[in-house]
Image 1 (cartoon, rainbow, N blue to C red):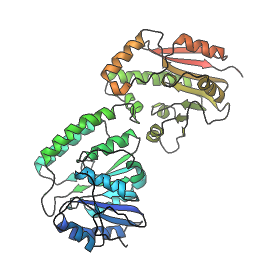
Image 2 (image 1 turned 120 degrees about the vertical axis):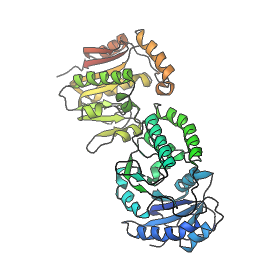
Image 3 (image 1 turned 90 degrees about the horizontal axis):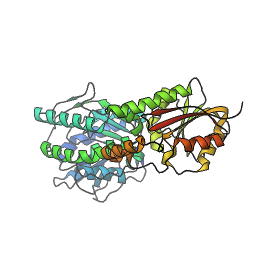
Amino acid sequence: MTNPITKTTEPRTPSTPKPLAIVVPCLNEAKNLRTLLPMLKSVADTLDTEAALYVLDGGSQDGTPEVAAEHGVAVLQQRGKGYGGAIRTALEDIDAEYILTLDADFSHPPAFIRYLWAVRDHAEIVIASRYAPQGFGAMPWSRTILSGLLNIVFRKALSLDVHDLSSGFRLYRRRAVSKLNLTYDTYAILQEILVKSYCQGYRVREIPFHYRPRKHGSTHARLFHFAIVYLKALHAMRSLRNSVESADYDSRAFFSRIPLQRWWQRRRYRIILDMIGANMRVLDAGCGSTQMLNGAPQIVGMDLQHKKLRFMRRPGRRLVNASTFDLPFKRDSFDVVISSQVIEHIPEENQIFEELDRVLAPGGMLILGTVDYGRPWWPMIEKAYAFFQPRGYADEHITRYTFDKLKRRLESMGYVLEAWRYIMAGEIIIQARKPGA
């Protein structure tokens, strides 16, 4: 394998992009690089792809760029401050399908790159994890306690299914991560990447590895400084994580730690499942990341927000990215059409109901769920929800329906209302039969 060489401090990439870029952020790591770079080249040669090596220099004064150039490795000068600036520079300047980052101090064994690369198709981010089962970190007791505590707090507060949120030994799918609008200059960018990836429905996978002590030099990490930086970032990230902008918002509500929210979601789930019955041709128009797709796997899930479908993707699952105003299905395609918690979020237009009716077969069943503004209970619940969870609600109900209004509209289309069920006298779910054989 031949790697490009550059001694300039201006950001450059190889003339021919490689599928994989192995990036080592550095600050005065010349001594370590003399041993590390030959090891990285040796590992890269064993991969089933071409890989380019980069040293991402943060302003070293010990000859780090010169050592990299001596070994035929490209040198990029990072823009911005700190570790966050280095990661953003790599994602913005390096033209590769995958970017792998690791530390220069031998705490991340180069041979482990093969393990990360082997599962690249399983997730957009693959993490070498100290805290996943069979992972291990050979660290001083003070760092072990603080690092473990920080990871537990972040995992619980942000509802992330990741054990090691602070590991910088990662493989990124660049086209996904580079779109996340990253802002942090500190090591908190590691958590920012995960939170924003979850909000976009991207997958994260952890592979257990054994963290090793630094070989040469002193660490640039200051543990208590890290803790302060992380805790300051936690509030902002938690606000985003709990907002409707998160791709898994609907799914997390089903498993919420808040009893009322969990009960409400599961009550809706049970009502709709009962109404679907044994029908096999079912469309959920506006499925979001609801658990209905798991409860009734015959459902074709359709939603306008691609990130929600991305989160719910599974082998064999049928998902469609489209709008309720223009359903991409033939007439009479389904025996059951569900529109739950959708119509209140979009303008009131005849086209919505016409499209739902068009794809529903004669004699088929429409399941229509929304909140009933004709009763006093929902406005009261709405105000309480907006107070306690402002970003979760986000004042998104732009059309206010009542039961009487929906009943008149459906009956004018020839539908027969067979049943309707309320949840806490606020949300209504209507089961209506389309005319025809």
